[in-house]
Amino acid sequence: MAFFPDRRMRRLRKNETIRRMVRETHLRVDDMILPLFVTYGKDVNNPIPSMPGHSQMSVDKVLLKNVEEAVKLGIPAVILFGIPETKDPGATQAYNSKAPVQRAVKLLKKEFGDDLWVITDVCMCEYTDHGHCGLVQDGRVLNDETLEVLAKEAISHAKEGADMVAPSDMMDGRVGFIRQELDDAGFEDVSIMAYSAKYCSAFYGPFREAAESAPAFGDRRSYQMDPANAREAMKELTLDEEEAADILMVKPALPYLDVIHAAAQEFDLPIAAYQVSGEFAMIEAAAQNGWIDRTKVMMETLISIKRAGADLILTYFAKDAARLLK
Image 1 (cartoon, rainbow, N blue to C red):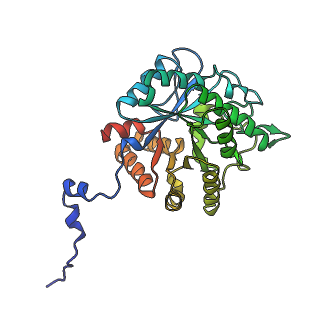
Image 2: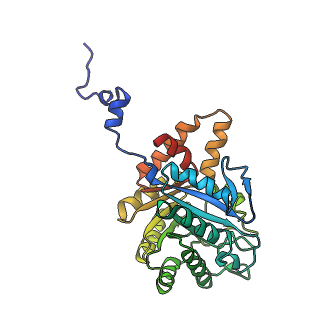
């Protein structure tokens, strides 16, 4: 008679009811943050070719309709990226009170109040004519001088009612500098989600189309992280924790699940992960070609990010996932 094991793992996989009962990792709508691109003009809804379902939106009824749908689905937060009407070397539109992000913050907080957590990206790449994340001199991205501009940008968002600012520039010391400047300006309650381990990744291509932020020269390897390094990420995360970040982020998500897991094991702060535009676009493209099941792959990737240890996920799939999870 053939030997059969006492421990049969399939017993707890018999049907969906028992699978649901013993499931280890749970994805919730509350885990998700929806990225949005806001621009100048009226009645603007410019589709982003490489990111199906997403658009550059003017700060009016176009944005409100999009966000109202997200709120009804239970998505608790959005993060705003701005496309200004003009760009210059000093990124002056980054802290202009009439720029798209500042206007969007004011509009969304007025419309949705505490029902929506409004987060703003704090960086200069969308606002500089050279596309780099900091001030440039003689072809070199300046670190300390850039901090002043980033802090002005963060404060301009806070003045309009932003709940959280998210510095994504990867300048050294920017979290502590922004925290101090926010506090000195009376915005002690505005929190910081730091892009702590932000890698110099090839997965950002569609975003750069959406935000019109590709570098005019060179690349960002002198300030974003080397994809080969994991121990360095722990140092970056530690520094941002010490500088009083409220949430730590790893970006991108899927190629860096090991870093997300290590961060979740090491730090008590909430860990966010950004499922970036390239991750989104690859799934969309493969699904459009009939090579994968879009819904199943979408949910499997989101579960993998949560399983790795992320508490929060910034994802362009937020609305579609929320519809399945409600």
